[in-house]
Image 1 (tube, rainbow, N blue to C red):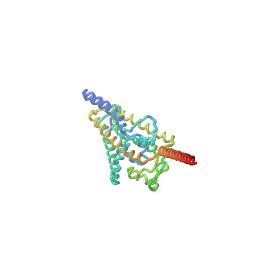
Image 2 (cartoon, rainbow, N blue to C red; image 1 turned 180 degrees about the vertical axis):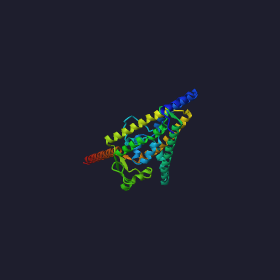
Image 3 (cartoon, rainbow, N blue to C red; image 1 turned 120 degrees about the vertical axis):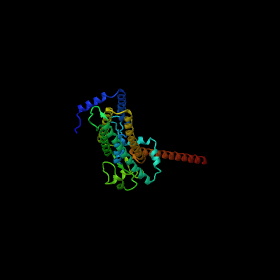
Image 4 (cartoon, rainbow, N blue to C red; image 1 turned 60 degrees about the vertical axis):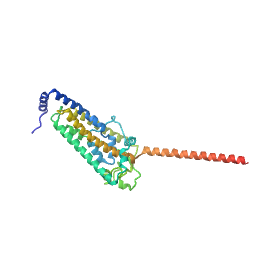
Length: 330
């Protein structure tokens, strides 16, 4: 059976609206307002581009699942460049609940955590997909009423900013340092390329099982990094506007049903945020930045100068005491 034409679909829609009482119309209007605010509210919980980029450098599959699990990605100022170094610096200012708890886990427990991460994220993606499909089937988009794929398209297009964030992580300047074992076993991160098969060990391990053996350099290629980062932010903004347009145009849904839809989306967003926070806290414990190395060198240099000055003062005092003693003796 052919799909109805837009004019026929809208004629049926007008006919249905004319036979709905005012109370139900008010109910649908409230649901429309609530759904229109949903993308912006969900974006507050979702991950941002810099966080996804940082996680993509070590666990790209996990970062992809996190991006797809979150119905909306977090937004900031347009063309705001936030490097992975800044993400680490901000992360270390926050309280470390998950890393304190995980420090008492055994190796077997940590592997169970890895399995649970993927299980929860896959479940969240399934929740988002089924929620979007049901929303498209049981409601009507006022400006394209014959299309049932609009909510699914909104949640699926999160792959676009993830790709931009992934390539941004590849263009960023990484350096492998302080490997506790052979560097070939851990692999290198960055444009120089990973050792074949090594990234799988990083992908399916938490930070406690395979501590990070590379550091972030504060310098980066401004042309590539800024361009890719700006492109990813554009994707996020377009998706936010598109999601708001679609969700605020849905008809024939009650306020309670709309609230159920938002709660299901919010549950998936919270799962993605918790998994991301756990990994970022681990990275912030093990990763070193050039800024911290320079700060450490500066502190050590000042400490050395202070010790030298103290020794010089002590030698001067000792020489003065000896001279006074000799003068008194003479």
